[in-house]
Each structure stands twice: as structure tokens, then as C-alpha cells.
Length: 268
Image (cartoon, rainbow, N blue to C red; front, side, top):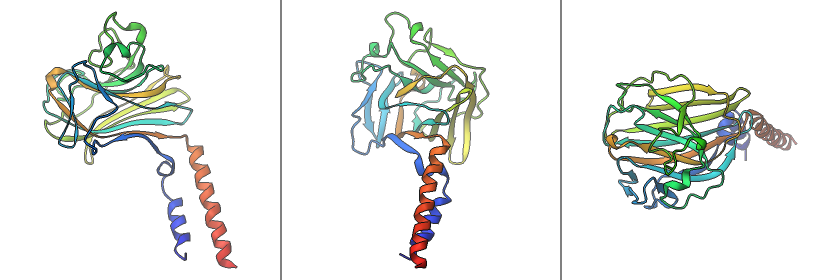
């Protein structure tokens, strides 16, 4: 018991986000299956391999998570590890993003299900040799008749949100990387950021503000590679939601009250 107060005080000095960050989706594929994951093809194209999810060349994968509408100050992040079998000089060859399905069920490998989806993706060249990274918004009203592909094509379905930016180094084949995509709701709209890193080194990144994205109810994640990239493998996929800071202050206040009560009991 004598160590409880120092422990509580130690908790109080942790970053606020560490107290209230909530993993609303996670999959490390350690159970040996990919239940809840769907590919962009009726032929499948996904399998468990080497402890992760292997996705065939030219395919995308999607999974559903708890619907999340961001309030002012809230953020949502898609985090995962990826290894690419081929690094091709392909503009926007690697894509990943978050979507609002508008209640459309995700329960089969069928492209037509994705027709009504809104969302925002990152499109980047894994080689870093040509083109620039960009954030792109999916507009279901632009969908080509008969093409419900969510991410395997961006033509006539996506529009670039804002000026693109240089993103730094190219990636290496058969090498693991950490990917982070974060949307933070501000008074100006959505602050969008992504990074691809190896250890402490950030290889690709971009940050912009999208002032029109105000009413997404995110519930689907997607990750895709064009055919020239070959297969890729995913692991440790997470969706993390962090409420606006005032929620953190409430949690910290509760811990202060606990520590004060304990101190008074000890004093008596």
C-alpha cells in the first residue's frame, strides 16, 4: 500500500493520450485466420503467410471497425506494418485510407458493395523516384458505372484534396515498415497526416488540412497496391481513436482525487 501513491503520481505525469487512446480495431493475425477481411476480388487473393496477411498483386483489402464520427479535437489513426515484395517506380502505387460506408455491409469479396463509400486515402510511390504523395478524397457521385472498386482504381473516383508534397526516400523490398495515417478534426476541418518509417527514421510523410471533410462516420479501412508492386504482407493493423484533450483532463482530475484521498487516509 505504501507504494500506491507514487504509482498514482507516476500515472498522472503520463501523456494524456496514453490514458484515453482507444484501440477500436486490432489484428495481428496470430490466430491464423483473416476473418473479417475482404479483398477487392471475387477470386480472393488474401492468405495468412509468415504470421501476417499476404495480399496478392493488384489487390486491395478492407476491414470494418466500430463507426466513428469525430468531434472537435478528436483524432483517428490507421496504423500497420507492411512489407512489399517489389518496389516499382509507380506513381500512387501504394494506397491506404479510411472510409465511410454509409451503412453498406462489408461481408464478401464483391466490388459493387463499395459504390456508395466516401473516404480519404494516401496515394504514394513506394520507390520515391517520381511523382509526389497526395491525399485523395473518394466521391461516390464520381463512380464510373459498373466499377465499384474501392482502391484498385482512382480514375474518375478520387480527386486530389490539396497540393501534393515531396515525401523523401524510397522503400526497399522485403523490408518491414511502420505506417501511420491520422485524421484530426480541427475548427478548420480535418488535419491529415501520414508517415512511413523504419525505426526512428521517417522515409515518407505529408501533412495538410482538408477544410471540407466535416461529416465522415469512419467505419472501414483499406490498403492497396497496384499490380507492379507484387504481393505485400500486413501485420499489426490497428485503428486508434483519441478523444479531444478535455476528456484527458477529466481522467487526470479523477486520478488526482484518488491520490489526494489516499494521502488523507495515510495522514490519519
